Image (cartoon, rainbow, N blue to C red; front, side, top):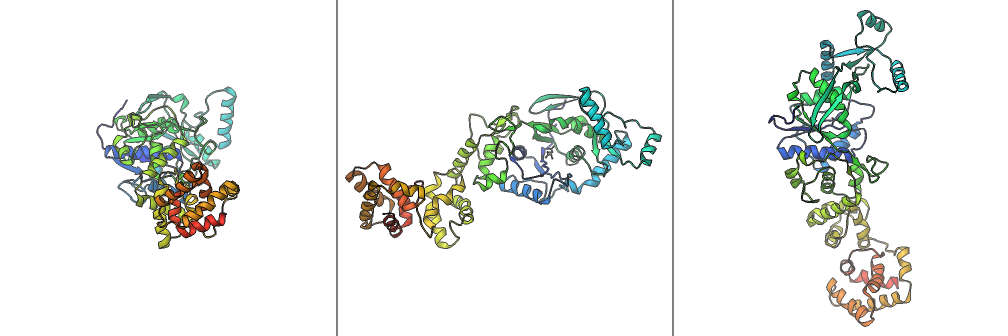
Length: 488
Ligand code: GLU
């Protein structure tokens, strides 16, 4: 069986059916397709499989396009960019599938099946009772002209079924090795519904051939559809040595070892975007789901991913989704941003939450404040909460925190701090720290955690905040003092 693509330039495709927002599993597939294309200098094709018009909507298609763009997975052929093998929306290729279905019928590879859905259901019921593998029983495989005429006279509208020969199909999966399917478990399958619309198996195989796809990297859930696709290639007259090569990526499991789904984890990429994950962190983390760069490395840039990605390094065993690891990688990627980049990522979160405006003064303050929190956050969505104290018009201390500074010791800390700070000549974090350490730690003998926690609450309104002295410097003398006095 074919194991390499005979030196042809690599062409891989990502072919989602957007019946909802793209999820973690889809994107892991898209990422591997993209990385493989970029690694080999090949072509990355983005094809929308939207023949299921009831479930795929224009909004979901647009969302899929936007998600790939947002992640930086740029495509060489596909929606918006076009290409020599378009259109790239299957709904615009229906005549192509109809032509091939007609050809298969004429060749005898496919046949019209007149069984009604009730009849098919009755067959399935029999099979269930007899405990045999479910599937079409071949009733319409060899109808006589008279039988066909009778069905037509009854007004039955046929579907088109592919004839599956006896025997088996063997192919070499680039991740799993040799895989064999016995055809007794691959019954004659439907290519075209009785309303003329094509099914996935027909459209996917026809397009992979016509778009000269050399590699099909996709989820393991599609492994069992491969023998049917190979059957379609065969009917199209493609030589086995010219079939695309298949690589079925391992499932992504949730923490509970069940397949990752909405039920056991957050699967929507849109959710991660809104929660403040960087595209590069998502890609880095998803790359580790089933692949490894080697040498125990976990942090890779997009460029390194394209340099290092090979199908040989993809594992066949399922990968487990680990939110903690994604958070850690996101924190690393945030810390690696330049200040300008960090500002560009942070600003939308501050604007959306209403924390800051795009006025010059707010922008200037955001730019000064960001360095003091860059080291401490794991997601961008933490930014508004941490910086709110700098912008808030009606400052108030959180109730839970206010209770913590109601004692005598706290009052003493606040009173002395107010007094010493008001005579401070220069308002910067080093000077603020020096005078406060002297007064509270050296003179009063307090533990830093206790002394500074009361001040933190008074000045920022919360016991969780960016570094205290830097926060006070940003807030300025007047506001800082006013807040300490107000707290008293
Ligand atoms: N459109 C199919 C799906 O979203 C995948 C097609 C393929 O990769 O072969 O499940």
